[in-house]
Length: 327
Image (cartoon, rainbow, N blue to C red; front, side, top):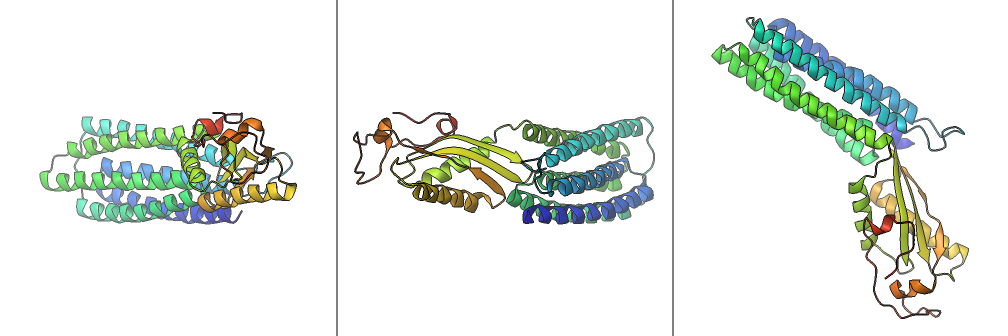
């Protein structure tokens, strides 16, 4: 719950910064009349709206579990990211429309030096804020913060390109450059919107995060204990910043309840150390059976029925199957 509150505080700060940057870009657009700067201002409008939606979604996801939401309210983050992706895409389409109109009906751009300076300042602030968002989002498994951070950094890259175009315009006086730059970065904005929508939909549909699973499999193989004979039926579901993990752990059948619980606790602590405390693990223990002996490397086992033949390396494919491993 502490990480969720941290996410919410950071999102509030980012939203406040977004409002200030939007005002600065509107001033720059008013001074210059540049469609390229309008592109930046429109994207900042999306930043503000998406930031407000993000604050609300993080407020919802921070609520504790209740009887009708047993897994918490973390899915609200995916819905927020989906809305942000749609808004980004709409902004891209509006920019293209405005830029094409400007190509057909060109006009002189004024006070470009002031406009370039203001836009450059907003770009620098955006990049720093985006970096902080992404790093905090990765640490706390928050899709909202990662989406906001990526959006802010994409906004920075767009700003850099727009500044380059405005500098060329300032020296060459070719007014079509303004619209051309706006159209180019509008397509970049559209692609960013698509990626955010795709990521949020995969979260809503509980699509497997192959990168996360692969990282976990490698970590489990490297830290495998001798009483962990087998691990199977691994499932990982994201609920906002919280990971819900369940799997079946096979241990020697003669361990008592406390000893089996100790092995489960060791597995839980290992996972939390690697992936953070904001997670829930459901790990029932299974007792080994005769065929388990062939893949069990436990030394000095007094009840072994078959000699050890081969250690089964856990992989992303076999660890997810709903059955014990065999040779």
